[in-house]
Length: 265
Image (cartoon, rainbow, N blue to C red; front, side, top):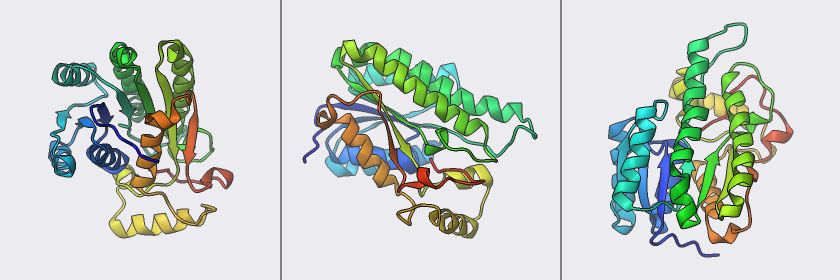
């Protein structure tokens, strides 16, 4: 099965690390023209440079905070001004936090929902006209945490549950316009997400991954490439009639439960 995105414009948010970086690199290898968004300028430009080396196409790096209206509007405008079209929107940018209802940290709650839900809602809305014009599609990066119960990161699974329902509703709304909308739902995935949220050392993170892997029926965590390959498949013509789907890539973790721990973005 061959995937070819030559001539297609793909926007990946949260592209400076983790799943977003892996997704950007795979789309670049498949010939896509890329708009890459992140908050860390140094890392974002490094990813853009790595993408450029693969096929000689220069990505458009956009340094923006998608938790702000200004950042969202900048992203949409610069992407469309530069490329004149959009074929695939990958809503990957997200944050998490360590808190519970008993700790009641409203600042953390607001930050998670501002980026993980409101930013996605706003950016998608601004880009829908371009996606209708290109008969493109949207891939949201969710999490198995959306449907599993754990203690310690309450706003994050709530936000991902909202994202899943957003996916289904927007898929129904845009289907008559020829635009598909789907979610890829990772389980434990090797990235910087957990260390950013928990301030773990590298050794602590390795221990956490080893412990979490014991809960995964297939015995190992996902890699960013595992998620990226599913994103590409769903965004391609090989999935032309797939819409409103929530597709788990988790090694079966959802069958076992995640306990008192975060999943990885």
